Image 1: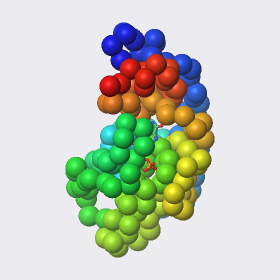
Image 2 (image 1 turned 180 degrees about the vertical axis):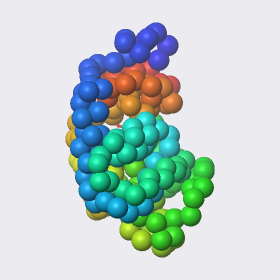
Image 3 (image 1 turned 30 degrees about the horizontal axis):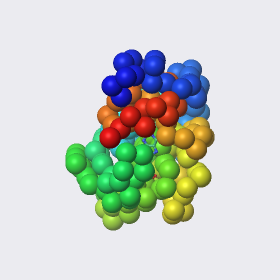
Length: 193
Ligand code: IMP
């Protein structure tokens, strides 16, 4: 990254603007609110990638009339082993839930699903704790290299078959704070030693 001094220089193109993302979150919020009308809901964001999705979704659900009776927000912090751009599905839980999952209507909130192994691992882990319902919400779906068939009840936007950054998604811990989804220039990857 040393010759690409600024974020602007590192970015090839914008894939979804902040407005596109806000609209998708509004749609997901309406679907989740409808499915949990009058019931408590536990939104479980997967850090670090779902940092923004989980909070924006929680606030959007609260604005839907006739939605859940109560909305709890919790996080797990998970890290997948793998190389810089592909997960291996071997997941480390760096921070577990702080609320009990048993008997709750849980929606896992993920930033992106690619091969599906990370989400599959989390679903199995949480299912073992006996939630009343377990559903999954993914903002960006990358369906091109799925290795496992994971159920995803709420899908936001389709990501191209590229490594993408922004709105919580990183490349080597950078670019998470971009308010939009972007594709990086090939040089960014080729400069890594
Ligand atoms: P999966 O196990 O291949 O489904 O990958 C899921 C995790 O890999 C996500 O939660 C992200 O942290 C990361 N990931 C997958 N694709 C991308 C991408 O294009 N940009 C940034 N992170 C990604």
